[in-house]
Amino acid sequence: MSKKKEIKLGKNAQSFSDHVCAGLEAGGKDLKDYIMQIVNNNETGEIGFLMSQVPLSEMCDEHTLESSESIVCWEDKITWHFEEDAPCMLIDKRQSASQCAVLFLGAMLTGQTIPAQKCRECA
Image (tube, rainbow, N blue to C red):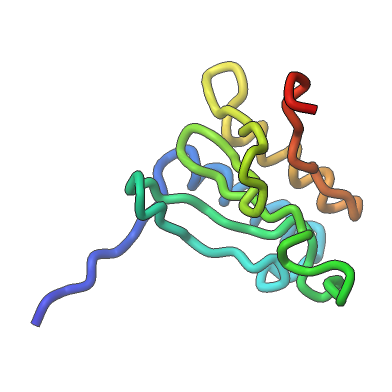
């Protein structure tokens, strides 16, 4: 009988997840409403934290999961899950995972989202 390998987030993705979850709970939000899960990029092997910026309870025909500004926090960046060509938000020494979490958390607690940014050269 083989044991299934437990998938764990890296340090930065875990920090992002911990900060967002603590802030949402402190704000009285239900974490299940944000469709949070650990994901694996099959091409790169990266492990990330996927979440919707819009609560599931607020989604409707016009506001679906695809339009909910879902993001994935990887170890070194944040990407917008359904935006193929969107630039990513880097996580590094100047902009830590916890700082990124506070940015998203602030928007989410006020009913806003951080939209995928478009490259100025491509727009």
